[in-house]
Picture 1: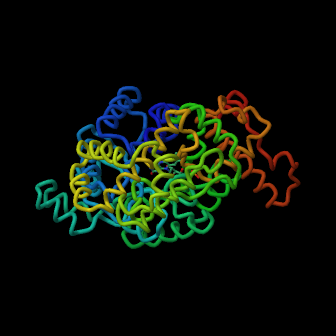
Picture 2 (picture 1 turned 90 degrees about the vertical axis):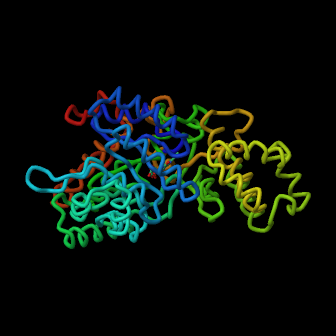
Picture 3 (picture 1 turned 180 degrees about the vertical axis):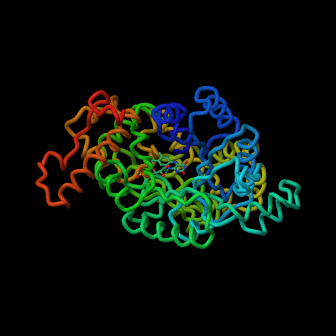
Length: 446
Ligand SMILES: Cc1cc2nc3c(=O)[nH]c(=O)nc-3n(C[C@H](O)[C@H](O)[C@H](O)COP(=O)(O)O)c2cc1C
């Protein structure tokens, strides 16, 4: 979860409990990501953990810089997401250090778990690295010919999370349709490439209750991944005020809104609608972006409204701050904006979209109506399940308690289901699983 919402604390708590957490590197500067990696490596040592790598079509240099950082720091597991196609940096990460193992097998030092919602993208991750990219890496001296040959024996990712309708970036696919398709793809490509280590498909999107996890496992998921419910937990990099808002969310309290990182492409993210006006305000910005060619051509009444309600400053002043930001982070963006007034307008609008998430994470009281909180319908499902239990209270929501309840509940419901299928009478209470405190969960689960 971007901007460190998937915090060091979440990753550590999950790792220590035998689960896998990913640090939310997206949206953070490389030096903040480096500080988080250093901390995780010091605190967790060999305990499994991973770091997110989000595809940034608008900032290709950033993706490459992060891969340099991950390789330099010896990050062994990356969760790659938002990819529309493979890029050289992600392939470079996967193949760096590839070698032959004791029985002649290809061994990679670095693992990629791809999170995707499109079958054509999944096929690329489940295939060996594209030959053209491998040749480019050889040409640059980053791979030897022997390593290039070895690359044909391994997929770019052995594990792939099928991401259905979720918080944040999402194609809004239902898990019940997406997962079987990804599993069929896995079987086809496993047969085609006969990898030594079998490909696996996990499930994400909407998993927030014992029932949803049980259903995913019954459908053949190798593992499940949660997002929205973790943001609502005390360890997340969000704020108490947002955790309170999330605890009040119902199933229909989400909406799609323009994404900051791919604003110009019309990409949307799923966010919390209740208690904030962000969805409406961001949609207004996109409408203005589509219909105007520059800040100067925005109809005066609209400009006044935007400056008063959203930016709380003249747009030219916002441009000055935006320009300074980009001169430091990616000067080519600022230079392009000087030549292209529509791009300048996009960068100014992205200033608001970017800050709206930071205001939420900081719990900035003067900006509550502008909070951008990524969130999927999983949140409402969780709240409904937790209603009347200790987990109704946001202060009691801890990632390990939540995850173990979902998993233990899924196991219990599955057992009851099989009993029922075998024709045995099943007490109604066995078909329900209410939240339990850690000490009440069966010892083999804890
Ligand atoms: C607050 C928030 C931030 C997210 N940021 C990222 C991100 O930076 N990178 C990423 O791969 N997925 C991100 N996601 C998606 C989650 O990692 C996860 O795939 C998704 O939330 C699972 O679906 P669910 O929300 O229904 O649990 C984010 C989700 C949320 C709720």
